[in-house]
Length: 408
Image (cartoon, rainbow, N blue to C red; front, side, top):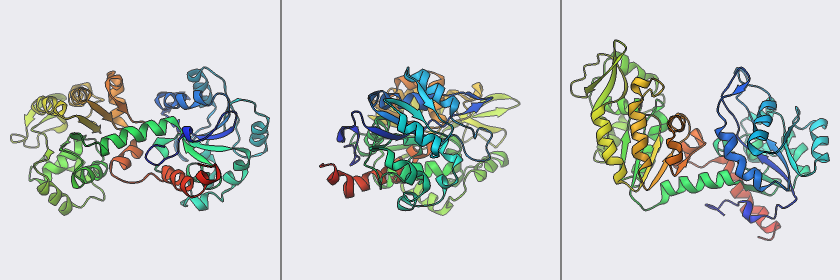
């Protein structure tokens, strides 16, 4: 068990029929998968189940997007990384898929993109989803359901929450690893610093409020657009261009509430001392005091970078989510990469999913971190103190039903 969640250690899965939800949603351009990080993250669980009959459920993108496509290429990519054939069938729960499942010996079979099926994304709870056609058709064919799709587990969708009410369900090794790392970042009594950046202010605000109000963080560093927002609340004039960027990214944020938070925790919140600004296509570092709104803020400045490089490693646990600037432009990558270096020097370092994990991989710093999360939205919600519905349903029905039925 990990945080009350049943794992593969809690069941006898040898030779059994396993239905496993994974998340291999990836950027695709011209039918080429550009990032296989999520594929690689599932390999340990898949290898552990090699003497089972493992059928995989996954999604790719969503309806209306250019990369909303079948999973045939995904099966080939998984096969290469796993070193074993992962079969693919362009069917989800029709007779073709069901016959292939029934004919399986040990091995792996990837079914079609679950989001090709309209009921997958309907707004329903677990019990309602458990009555959907995909669950009714597939559940009788399996002994266990395994959720290893951490990065999708904040979504109440049929393939994620519909099976635990009707099949004994546990979490896979990736989910176990993610929960252990994120729980340590939240629950450990060691001194913690959180570095929150990026453009989506609401994400950072959720984490900031949780870790400050619950006394989890000793310090919270703000960078990126969220830092600019709090500087504006503090009365700093950033100029029309920068203020427009903030306004475009603060949907759902209450200024009065955030100003109260800033005042209440001013001694714990660290804001930039200077900016990396784009002027005439070049970088110029300007202090917050001297900045008059001339040019677009693209990064934290060198003085802030120097200060954070000293401050962050002083703390036992460092958690970073969101880049410090527009790291895709090499002129403004310095802040993000140097802050990541500082995070990697902490005793325990955790990198959230999404853009900041991409930045860490770009410069090889992912290998120096204690944990790099595969989940953007899921890790944000976990760090915000919110429950992930895909994990909660596994926990709930294990306690209510499956633990007793399996003699646990």
